[in-house]
Length: 357
Image: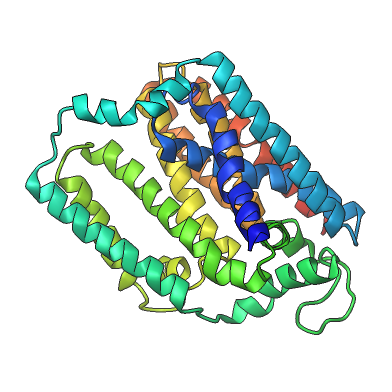
């Protein structure tokens, strides 16, 4: 039990918060926005693991033990460095964190009764989704491949050299193996001592579903206003559309709630949303110096490649189309080369995919 608690706190607590503190200044966010820090840190954790896992997988077929040790050491060092660097850079950081309650007392509440009602309704729908995701393990045909990949890596220590369908040895299928999300699930299983299938079906929805709604909240706040009643109405409608969106096996709502742990679901429901939010932040303050948002966009692109081989292509396509529109809107070609720099991870990943295939 202690192993599970400590491993879970490391993977889902210490590392995201430690890495996320690095982004506090670059994104011009208040230091008490813990969810902002956690989102940026969680994306950074996935991106760092992708960068580590792909070379290890290609060079060491039996390297799961080495991958766990190397990833843990790198993530621990970077998280500690982020916390120390933030503490040194902004001495008032932790002081403000302690004084959050006092800050709320001084802040004027501008939330109407209608807002509170809709926020309660949204919270109820969110809790319902989390309860259903935790209590009911929905089986999907793709589990026979992706979840089995995680189980094999965790239990045998072999990295993508066993065919999930038959259990026979095989060469790695680069279309799938360069996307290291199943290996990250196996890494979480090793760190927590929880079976990889349970991590995928039970643990990850409790993290990914709230994070996705938080990104919806960030987008809604940007478009509708932080204190407008339209924001909780928007969140409630999105939540209800997800609950009742299982009109076919191909809708994003179906993937979001019944296949939450699959890389293509994370790409469609979280990473692409993060890209939209970051692009809104970048172009809303285009003339301001917000380098953190540009850098986090590149990190999100690495995470997209981690989810599925199509992730690098789709995010580059979205960013490219947005860049053309923004260049016309702002009458500035600098938009294009800045966005092109953010897409360098996409180009590298797609080049690797073409080379190894």
